[in-house]
Every structure is written in structure tokens, then in C-alpha cells.
Image (tube, rainbow, N blue to C red; front, side, top):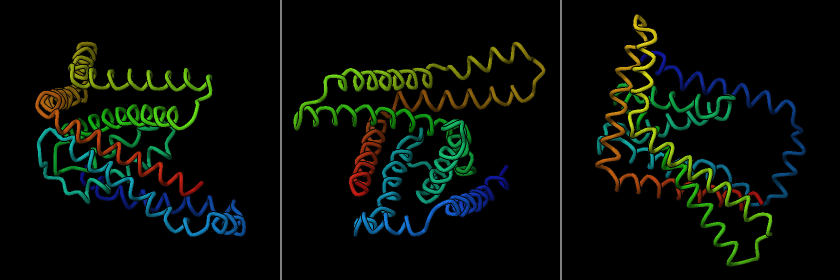
Length: 242
């Protein structure tokens, strides 16, 4: 397990470089150069901005642990996040692929259950920050310019869906849902050793999540604000591209 975690970043880097080389084969270098010239001096800021938004999101993840000051270096969190997000972008399973890898890469600094519970909290606060960001954008757009009538119901629907997603994530992660599923599965397959191991992880993860939501409300707010800062940096990146 530790050997796999140790080599996974290097394997991901090799895979990423291979995919980059494959993509560049289908592009015209001249067209890429012309596009960079049209963007102007702002093209020099795109790469730093594309990386900088990872920093507040990693700070948000650091606030999402049950144990304040968990013994995970920031550099390790940042590396795990980059690897996990890269897998999320590559795999058709979206976050189902990269999020467990983030937790895996934090071992042995913290247990897998605590790492995975922190990933769950971070995903919840990230979704909440998106809701706040959209609401702020709608308010700013309504103040600065009249919104098209058809846009308002669509935007309200997106916000409502995201809001329900936040509620579902928070309730599901703090109500012992994982433990209940593991118990039901174990009753169905009582001789499955891997289910017993999964049940132990589910119990520990439920305990971490319950402790966090009960005791660490300030850190929940801090994680949401850090994710919001990441969204602001991402919007600046889009402005530079435009």
C-alpha cells in the first residue's frame, strides 16, 4: 500500500506528460503561438494563476481534518490535491476517482479513514462556497445590469440543486450512513472479510465526521471561505484569458 502511494505521483506525472505530448501532436504550433500573441502579456500570468487557485483550496482541505493541526505537511496536501484533481479531470468517474487517491496519498501521516473524512468535509465546503459564489455573482449582475428573464429561473435552479447537494453531503456524512450501509452489506455477506475491513473504516470515518461537525464549526466556516477565495482566483484567470 505504501509502495503504491509512493510511486503513484511519479506514475501520474509520466501519464500526464504522455497525454500532453499526444495532445500537442494534434495541434498546430503556429495556431498556438498566434493565440498567445492575441492574448498579449496576460498569457504570462495564466500559468501562475492556474496554480495559485490550488493554494487556498489546499488551505481549505487543511481546515477539514477532525484533529486541529493534523500532522500532514502543506506540501504533502498540495501534492495529493494536484494528483487527485488530475485524475478527476482524466477519469470519466469524475470525483469518484481522484478523491480516494487524495486520502491514500496522505498515509501514513493520518489514517485512511480520517483522510477520507477530511476529503468529504472539503467537498462539502467547496460545494457550499460555489453556492455563495453564484449568489454573489447573481447579485452583482442584477446590480450592474439587468439580467435576461430566462436566466433567473435557470440560475435559481442551479443554486437550489447545489444547496440540496450541500445538505445531502452534510447529512449523509454526519448521520452514520456509511456505517449503516456496511452493516446491511455484512448481514447479506457475513463471510466477506473485505466487508469487515470496510466496516471498520466506516465506523472510524463516521466518528471523524461526527466529531468535526460537532466541534469544529469555525474550521468549517474557514474551509468554506478558503474555497471561496479559490473561486475568486479562478474567475481572475478567466478574465485574463478573455
